[in-house]
Image (cartoon, rainbow, N blue to C red; front, top):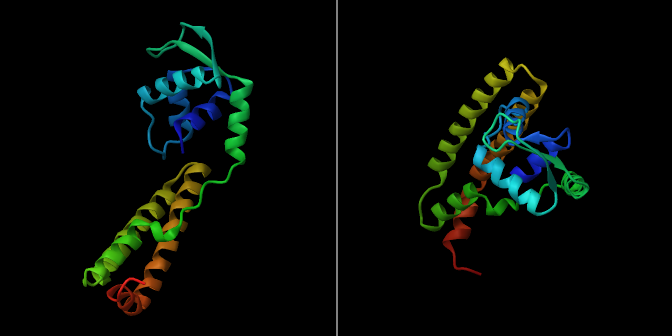
Length: 178
């Protein structure tokens, strides 16, 4: 997720000042990482430079910049392209947990303690998310919790699968490089 796409999406609704963009973001996406004013203003400057937004007025805003920006046709096109493009799917063998397991086995260590600790951490986070979801007051918060829960559940299935294959995996990593 990029600040550029966030701002383009919010500006599509109506022209805004940087201060208003931050307030709108925080109101709509309270569960996501916060945006700093410096991120917003530097991104607006780049978007303006690149012709994706345009300055429509100065003054009258509540924030320090007091410049109001609107989306240009190029900005709409950029936003539409981003919305239509699938998120790149990571290649699972490049995941940090896989690398930790592999390096533990490569060094002759057991990966079982790591996987047990990771399982416990995942389960604790799932309990936290389930509690958040139960107390959620918006559909967006519920869906975001579900997104995280489903990913953690998939990780737990991978951990269980890997534990069952540890002996074969250890033998593979203890042998010579092919």
